[in-house]
Length: 495
Picture 1 (spheres, rainbow, N blue to C red):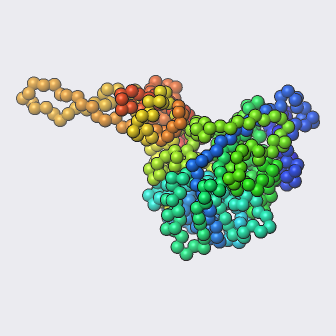
Picture 2: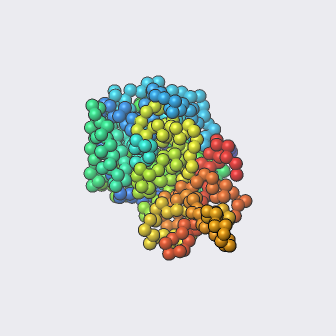
Picture 3: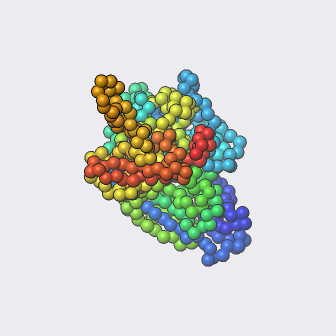
């Protein structure tokens, strides 16, 4: 039973979610827990469509092995270390103290069936899931071509389901042809087939579900009821049973749902904030015009407010979390995945999977810890001034507190027979970072790590700004990212 209720220790409890019948999967308030009706949390269901997405369907016996050699995530439990730049680093599931004994997946042979997706890191080690995985494609120099979401399809296994792996890969429409070329170049003798899915046959929806009236010191109910249990499945059958339970209860097992991604990148933000919404992404058939019609509100015993949002609003919300999503937000092959904090996101980059395209530079950067810049959320004053800039994205960010002396240097020694004072000349200041993308006043920027003390400490009075071609400045205020405290501790960084 899926239980959301106020109890003495201010947590929301889970009761055998993975093993109960889907029909018993319910958010309820019980008298035994003494819940006052006036304190029942209201729900909020926000959604928006994304019309700039493209998809590639890939299937065949060698699909998992093929993708494992191209993306940054680890899709197979075994690996062969090629050299010293492959780092074996035991990972801790982000933001949780609930790490139990590491239990391996007993067997995983994706050639024998449509197993779903292997996830390298969970609260008890690796797990199998039929929900989507956030990952990335790199070029041979380790630069990011694009991020992607990989959806096992169909979402649920039934009789007649193909007995070989099958996935849908999601991209922005401006990079899908590039990825098709990459797949074709690496296919060789692999037993796979892939094809571009017509954009007129599918729709993409971003969904956020939250409970804004819960006490903030209560544990977020999505962990006990969804996020932690889904990371415990050790077999394809367990993953399919859990997915069937969740999907039938929350989405009425609608056959028009082709893929589901459960957002895990924001777990550090939500684990200790009960009001932080849980995000989902649905890939549906073209017939779906309103995903709220698929949602089973009856599983909750409190009213919901449904809001259809403009895609730009959702993009703003994503930037406030410091996340990018597809090549809509950045230029392909210009950034390192670690600069975008992919190493701090669960199961997005593997540090011990062995070879994949772009692995050498990524592993070396991770092993040495030498990284000059990282992505942070920013807030922009007078952001309208950027609208007419020819290079709005990747605009240089400067620091205004540097003294005149720091900018100046003496020119070559003057003629000793000429009675003139040395002339001071301006030395070009190295930018503190660059704006990657923005939507209105919110955006994301690459900020040099050496400027983190100035950006995130209240002891230094500095200002970051973007100088426009018309001579006006756009003030840039870096926002402390959700990963900052853990990163500071792991890298012994002091502010």
